Image (tube, rainbow, N blue to C red; front, side, top):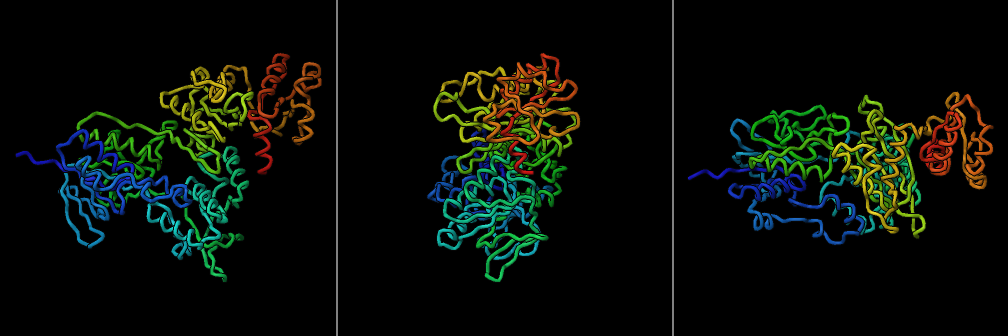
Length: 553
């Protein structure tokens, strides 16, 4: 009788649960066992902040699949509250502890899939273990926080870290009437965005009453004389709080793999090939603990996204079942919705390209197109940035912030990037149009047109950083009434409506930087001035972008 092959999977949730389910569909003749340290094998960890805020009312809504369902539907065994202690590759065995009883058993495997995920980072600083200092990783964490808030034990909360989780929890605590202070060690909130784009998100947070502190690297936590919690660094201290949430990023859980001799990559995560195989035969790895490669820069990185983990899990299951499928690289497409505003991004922004040492010449354009035609009621701006390679127009990244339609435009751009799309593809792509949903020149098309015209020499671009450079002249082509309401220091105003009569007033020996409110009129002015033989460039994004930078200085 042929021995039944055994596949052990360490970790559930997005990576482990997906690998198990697909493998059961591809090969029903093997025994599949998920070993999960927590109490729940498959839960919606992205929904935890909304459970805290009461948007998701019932805990059961977060629990996507029970051990009983896995067994009945897929024939998969699930061992919750069991922890994998050690891998013994030479004997193809896994040492597992039952966390309820303390009993340890050794389980043999034919294939082993590691999906341990990533843990919230807890830096070694004073006060890190004080009661009331929390992290958010699983359902029990969320239950503890929710119960504390509902009992009235939290009037003031301090959130350290202004990434996705930090901002989502901030919103949900505000919905419960909690005063929130948000502290970020970097220059701006939502680090996956660059500074100018994140400024739109920061405006929303401040408008909703969140106290925001940036450039504050917390050195420790302490109890005040009033018994409250407080963060501090040299020359600064936070407001007093009843609860502190540490949301300063995650670290791949790699100790189990490292102890077994599995190779780690330069980014500190588990190194895998395109079929998710580790350096030890018979062992695969997926999810947040795995090193990935940026599709834009080709360099190693880590990325904690459920969609990426699920795609990797499908590849690993296919590989175990003998299929030749591959996972190659990531764009880092993400989205956040906070206080009714969406921030979406894909690929690399200028800050990311500089940080990762991208050595090809690149450029970007800013714009503020509307999500649908302006004659239809409810038109709102989408603040957008598109980054592209100069030599061929290859799209390197994009970001968008707006109340409606931002994510849809980033999805379009991400899909094009996945197929090596250029700004020329983006200006041509055929998108949905109706007065309620878009425009004949969709917001995404407009970004492509701006970039493509720049590369064709029809749209010389400038940025806020160029203002004040030697040899430049700042020209405001807004109407006089607009300028009176919102002047920009140092700019000379000649409205576009009078430019054809007054263009000779402009210097012929200087680089004329032109702006209007959002960029369209400035583009028309630049085209006219260029046709008259003057050197002129459009400050993309116009006054809307410039004013943000001016206000942050």
